[in-house]
Image 1 (tube, one colour):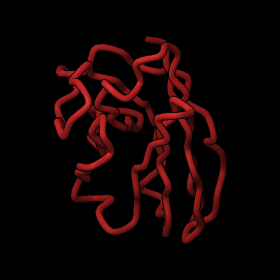
Image 2 (cartoon, helix red, strand yellow):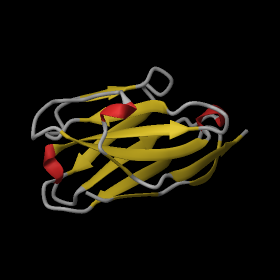
Image 3 (spheres, one colour):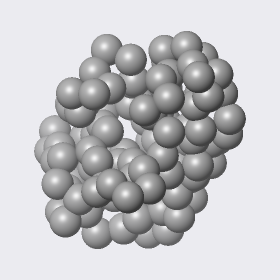
Length: 126
């Protein structure tokens, strides 16, 4: 599967952005979809994940209650709605896919994902 993330940009602190990740292929609903981010000089950080069915979501502690992951299996697209953005949210954001079946499997571990998008830059100014 090929993934393409888009929607990044420059936003002021307190603002919102919605990232999208479009996937190729006809079996999108069988993939667990994760979002990760990486800031310069830092390790890749787990942001959020949604199961193939959309019935399970998990978030990283630093974004909990501010970010929301959702998916539209008919459009083979996963979204990351980011609200109340902070300068420390500045990073390149990546979407990733793991073949897990249409169920409730979620994972926060980058090494469990099989496919990665190219990343989209999010910059939050203070």
